[in-house]
Length: 264
Image (tube, rainbow, N blue to C red; front, top):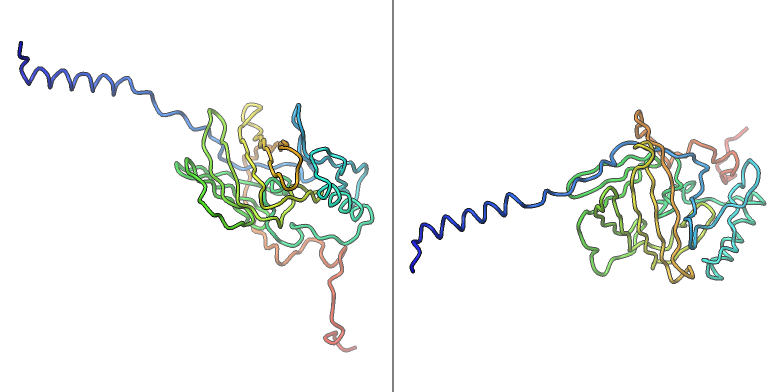
């Protein structure tokens, strides 16, 4: 039996309309936007199991307070020696300028120990993480792929996607000029960092979990986290790191050329 064309067309349209009506809605994107802070003396938290970050073993107060535990089993011998020497200089309060004091980018995951406010801005295609300290910024490209043949840079290339209530950020292509933490733990340009951002404690805390892989510096992948307190009245203050108005020249005297000293 031959079926009239208009009946076939009507049935096709009806089926298509039913399929469209049954299509699953786009997943909701978690709201991570806002301003966040953490205590400037906070160290990375350790995971409940597995290898964790280098721990600060300093006990007390004052300067020279970042003494990394060079016996951490995730450190390869050369990296452990770097951490040990860094702790020695801290104990002796030897002038030892960090990337923060030299106004250089911090890299990842060391950026999570940076003091001052951070702000997260979300758009459909990008997430911007803005840091008050020297106005550093990271751009995360959503649902993208890493470019091939990346030239190593301070923050490398970051891509991201959402998994439920979590923003997952994958970063590669960083150079070897930064530390992984405040204790001077080194890494190579093979470092690969995966961060997972989500809010906890009824939205009052932003937790940034991260896992670091670098076969050139570490014996195996290791993990840590940093908790940020939400600051509803936060703001990104103006900072000019190159002027360095904090304590350079006081604790670390600035060299002077006697030929240009003012005459008495």
